Amino acid sequence: MRVLGVDPGSRFLGYGLVDVIGGRPRHVAHGVVRAGTSVPLEERLEVIFLELGRVIDVFAPEAIAVEGVFTHKNARSALILGHARGVVLLLAARARVPLFEYAPARVKRAIGSGGNDSKDSVARMVTRVLQLQEPLERADAYDALAVACCHAHQVPLAALRPSRRGRGAQPASFASRLAPNVVRPRASVEPVP
Image (cartoon, rainbow, N blue to C red):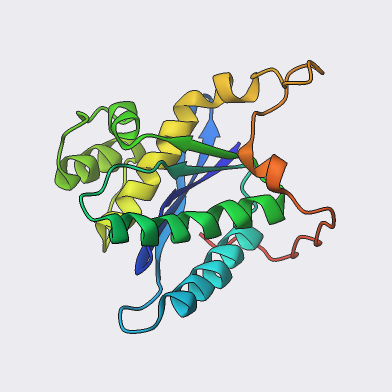
């Protein structure tokens, strides 16, 4: 299974892809969508929509994992972060890819880091778990890979959750409830590592 992890942000949005092979995550790709710092929010959201949409088209993930909302001291910052997360939810729905959400503390525990550990600790653990050879440019990419790894550890549970309608084992997905009636064809683009 290929998992896309997303660390949402309105200026820098991290993404990381892992393949789950034999129950273990293997690094596929990572990056940061740089939406800009001096442009209006609506233009940043458009950049996120276009760039992350391209990542989904190229790498064809089977699941998208996003870091959940956490309490902000600044309500405005929380609201803006919510807009960026909304774009991720919309992209998952449009691509008909199941979406899973994990609390930040759970993500850190899943990679062997404590719930209150620093971003440096998360980067060290992601480097170790995925056996990365080169340091990543921004912490956003480490955080996104950590979210993907968190889901990779949950795959057996996530894949076997019973549906609410009782029709057997189906992925529980918020994105599937938001999916549009018309499905756009998936681009035929070769994955680029």
